[in-house]
Amino acid sequence: MTAKDAPGKGALDALSKAYGDFECEPLRKEAEPLERLLFMLLATGQRRAEAQALITSLVPGRYVDWNEVRVTPAFELGRALAPGEGRAKDEKAGLVRAAHMREFLATIFNRFNKVSLAFLHEGSALPDAARKRDRFMTWVLEAHPALGLCLAAELSTKLDAAQQPAAQRVVQRLGWSRGKSGVAAVRSAIDAHAGSTRQGVLFWRLIHVAHAHCHARTPDCEHCPIASECALGKKTVRSASKKEAAPRVRK
Image (cartoon, rainbow, N blue to C red):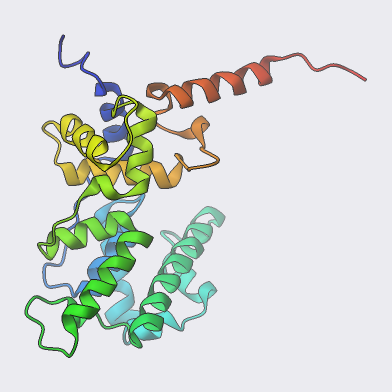
């Protein structure tokens, strides 16, 4: 069997083409934890340099700090996060990014009474830093698994990608776990298919496709980049094609 014919090779190639290699590190090495997380949040679906340019244009720049960004009206923040000017598509993209950023900042503020994440620094002497760090990691891994993965790697925190439901779902639908369920089977499948690809990068891609297309109840197989490698995807797309090709009966 050649490498080209290896099980899962088609899906790996399709994932790589669709999402590429995501780098957790922002372009500014001295970036604070919150800026790093916001950068990763914006970097989804666009180039790193573009995401970093948007982040650095906000603070310091348009706004004094991230708390001011948190209370900024969505339409104003949306204009600041639009990749271009005057085009409806860009304005819509800016509003979507603004909504995600405001929700992210609001959740942090509501949980910790401020948007500073200084307690994430290694060796932080802040009161209850360890407890706050655990609380924060629990939340971010549940709400934003891919961001949590990058943050965990940065904090040298052990993270098992196979425990994330979204990754489990994609692996099982691709048939990588050979019909077996459970964390151990999914972990083994991810390890076996990662190959020369860093497991973190593969996990990032699996999370992307899970959140964008491979939903638990209503998967969007029609637009999924790995539908042709998935039994459910093939069946769904084929069924949709038959419905479109069926002649309409006049009443």
